[in-house]
Image 1: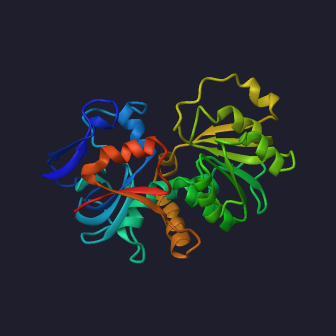
Image 2: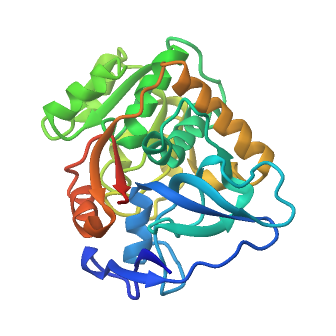
Length: 327
């Protein structure tokens, strides 16, 4: 039996219950990992509330790091005793779990477990956003991009990685303190959307041209303004709904605003194969090991305090990454 956090019905943080659950042996293509740290992400909130479908009861959480305890038949890239980290299917809020080995990667010795747990889902998200979600015209050093929630877990990684790639990242955040954090981590400009019209400020920064790409995990609250920030043929990359889902819209607005492109991305489409997962992870490991990207863990909560961790995340009281720790 292992300690785990389970939800039996959708709702607020109060539905997160600490329970004892059995953990079995891995089947073919699976591994069992003993967690040293667990990552917390906004997608966990979506599963908890029912915005994203998942069979109940369920153990939420899609990110963790620890040591491989058992390996199922057919798994060749991992062995018992390996340090490992993953972004994978829901189920990480626990001391140990069995999951498919496809998304689990050997963690380099130079990267601590806490960092591994904090960076996999968020870092791999930043990787596909900046490296794979490109506008038709492509991205070149010196190009402007807009990144909402720039002081969050994905945002701080993206600020640093964009700087390393030569992009001029304009970040938005909800306080002067968060804006200062984004700037300290590589954003070229930061806009406090609580005080300024971010769309007007983006046009001012870019000399009226707009940006090539907007990366938006906020959703409903930023949608209209984000479209107004794009230059002709620009790309709107929607990858989250922190303020609620984007409402239905008439495609004609995309033509009126400059023949724009819109895409709704999910990490696990990019991680569909073992080869693609490992290539993305290797890119992330390299940029972190090089020092070009530092993983900021802004909050640490014991597994038993997961309800408070969710409250803080939803109230936008967090910066950087949040992890759940184990005794």
